[in-house]
Image (cartoon, rainbow, N blue to C red; front, top):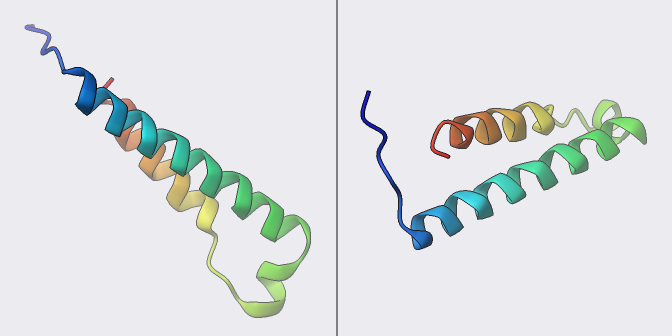
Length: 60
């Protein structure tokens, strides 16, 4: 299998999305911990953050 190299700008963009998705997970955990999610029926955003993180994990 041939490994494809990515340039630095693409790597920076992927790192940005990874960091952003990690922040979404943290915010989602805080929302569910303090009960805001149940009170206002906010969807579970940490699941979205995990999906984005795992999607971009394939590109590293």
